[in-house]
Image (cartoon, rainbow, N blue to C red; front, side):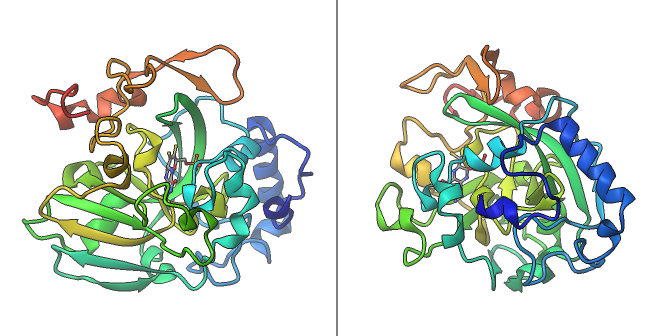
Length: 318
Ligand code: MTE
């Protein structure tokens, strides 16, 4: 398999990377020169041009915002994806991963802030602490995974650009490159992929911009070089391959809401009592498990995020 063959570790592509193997690999890397030498990145060099999916990320600290659920195997996390720009089949994103060109890459900061600008991805990430956070991802299609992300705090990033008092929402736009991305030659969505959060949701300490998973640079199919992760919302809120972040006064028009306004609301909080019009949201299948689990309110993060929605009718604002 193409992406895995470039990884710093030498786990065979046929091998399922479960949690114990992951831990062994981490130990191995810690205990060999590999971690300190060529396979690891020099401090301060987070995502240089030569970095490819699978290279290990250096200087990653463990975050307190982490779960001890069993991890979804690496192969499932990277081969069962939704990334419509690379095709609508679950295996299409991995198969077409090479079509996504992640270098050079810049991120535009626009709208209601004091410091708009265009930043090279390396400069964009460099000031921030890289943290590993194990989060649940619950897809609107009623499956879920547990993923050890490596990311940076979205709040810290946004504060750097000094949002004004008019910044009520934050809009995230993904790459638009129909020449290279096969899925964008078909009008499955109104391209580019746009998502949005209310500013207080974006500033919540659980919201991150992920640049890696399983300790390694984010594979293209998972949204390289940088994607949003908002664990209490359905997976589609977590925009991949972000090229623009805009502070806005009005609610952004999001790609899924435009495609199906009665199916995909702006909030998209994981909520087992609000069914999708075409299926129940009460249960979910954790990838790799046989028996379905009950879906938890806010994907299990109610204690942390429920207060964001005090007084709101979450059936109306789904
Ligand atoms: N971002 C973009 N740009 N395009 C997409 O098609 N799919 C979303 C979300 N982000 C999507 C996207 C959906 S529906 C889900 S469930 C998650 O990405 C899946 O993330 P994963 O493939 O890393 O598990």
